[in-house]
Each structure stands twice: as C-alpha cells, then as structure tokens.
Picture 1 (tube, rainbow, N blue to C red):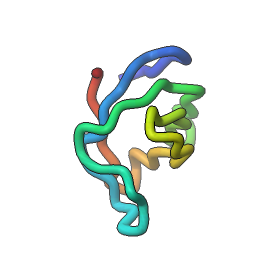
Picture 2 (cartoon, rainbow, N blue to C red; picture 1 turned 45 degrees about the vertical axis):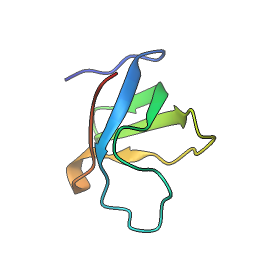
Picture 3 (tube, one colour; picture 1 turned 90 degrees about the horizontal axis):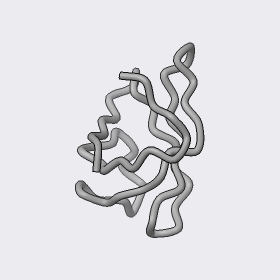
Picture 4 (cartoon, helix red, strand yellow; picture 1 turned 180 degrees about the horizontal axis):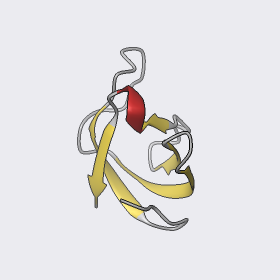
Length: 62
C-alpha cells in the first residue's frame, strides 16, 4: 500500500517494545520509503517513531 505525506494512519502494532505508542494511536505520514518499507510518522502524541513495515510494524488508515 503506498503512503503519501499527509495521510492519516493509526497504529495496529509495533515491534518496538520501548515505545509509549499504543494500538489505535494516530498520526500523519511525513514520508514513505518503499525501498526500506519505512514509514516516517508525526504521531499526535508527539512521538516521531518510524514504522518499519518489514520488521513487523503495522498501521491502518485512520
């Protein structure tokens, strides 16, 4: 699924066990690298954690 800057997404799950993000948290896509399968997100909570879709992170449209 291609992501575009400005798309709103919600977290389904993340492999990062140290983040304070929780399923359902929402954010705005900053950029998406199809090569790395990395999604850079400005989370509404203030977090800037990137989603590594090839490492088990999963998001859905918000």
